[in-house]
Image (cartoon, rainbow, N blue to C red; front, side):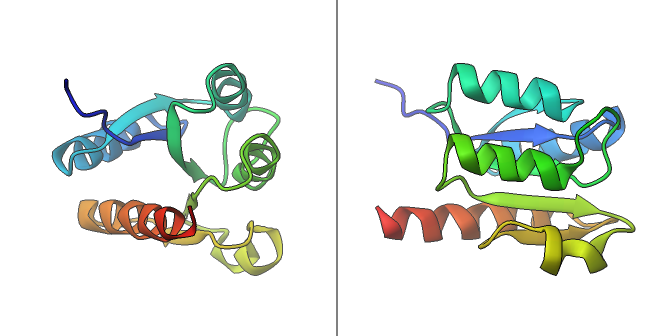
Length: 129
């Protein structure tokens, strides 16, 4: 039986960055599902919350929901979901808007930084269960 990969829900409205993140995660042995809006992400997660092991979201998204709000709602659906934020300009808002136990990546970042952040939070989550 094939082992299931940990799947990361990626919310990023720039397709080039989506591809960059998917490639980095896939090369490190993670699955990735990329969506362009927070609304889509919440709909997909609500339909199959056990599929996803972590959230990686841009802070400034097109649409009505910011990455801050997406993460808060994701934690309502799945309280133990690891959250990684990405931003180029809103990092100073993380202490007041970020969910507890999250990580912030400042754009631009290297592929290894994405993989390290996801692995770190998944390791922390697995020690709690």
